Amino acid sequence: MESLRIGMFSWESLHSVRVGGISPHVTELAESLAQLGHEVHIFTRSGWYRDYDEINGVHYQRCAHEESGNIVQQMDKMCNAMSDRFGKVKNEYGDFDILHGHDWHPVNVLNRIKKQYGKPYVLTLHSTEWGRNGNQNGWWDEAREISHREWLGGYESSVVIVTSEEFKQEVQYNYQIPDYKIEVIPNGIFPGKIEKEINPGEIKKGYGIHPYAPVILFTGRMSYQKGTDMLVRAVPEVLHNFWDAHFVFIGDGGMKDYCEQLAWNIGVESSCHFLGYAPNDVLFDWVNACDMACVPSRNEPFGIVVLEAWDACKPVIATDAVHIVDNFSNGIVGYKSPESIAWGINYAMGGLDSSTKQMGKNGKRLIETKYNWKTIAKSTLRTYRNVIQ
Image (cartoon, rainbow, N blue to C red; front, side, top):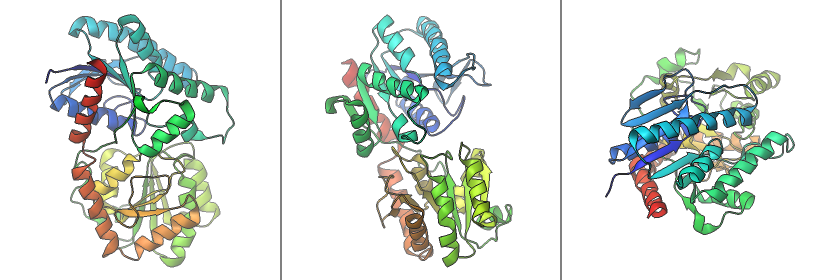
């Protein structure tokens, strides 16, 4: 098949500014496409990086811009910088076959390029503004504009990619995108990315935890959407049954300080460890050292942290917002409440040496057969070719 020149547009990646789950998705999808023989340029923010690098076969076109103002104003400036950079890259490398944007952040530049050069684009929605925040803070001007850009990207793009059937329903409910225009392509991971040989006891001792104490791990953005507060409220019921359990929280976000204070208020601070943002080596150590991962989300379009846990053969305790976990097969699924989350953790703790361990192994098999980037890259390529044929 003929090689494609692909332009990806994202406000984050693993080799520029990194914020959340879009980073590994964009970077690893691009690397997989490059491995299949295609030329991929990622247009992204520069942060503290230089303007250009080629990393693992992917061209990083980093776009510097002034960063004052709210998030919408910052993304306007980012889109202006991306538009300028795209014109220069197009002149240097030649025309692009397809453009692929990620979430609402680059929608303005994608529409500008579409109008100026007649280039079609595909848009992957990783979440919606409604899903991230609901109505908890009212429907303020900034949220309305973000939601409008999500709708606009859905309207102007040739295809909208979503990561699950359940998330497809959310997107259609909010933005009335017809079935024929939506493709469901899941998130992925490189098998073996997380799993490594470690001494769990040594990792635990380094943080003042007994080497044989069971550990429940949360990783991700600490926000209302991710339900971190519900997990903290579940801790007393778990300790009532398993007094030596410890909870490690890795990630930053608007609810981190609140959750730390909450742990103090309910008297479980000695069993909760809030590490904040952690580099990959620390993150990977803990995913391998823990006994189970917990994903207590109120809303979850996919849940790449589930794949990371499975890659290390760890079972996942999740709410029913997380749709990729099969109950009692590769994890435990409960309701979106502290009581149900605690029940799931307690159930899994009772089978650490047998059934719970098998759940982690079952998840690992899904990584190898269904959620690997090579398979997902091929599905994405089929979508590209359908757009440009």
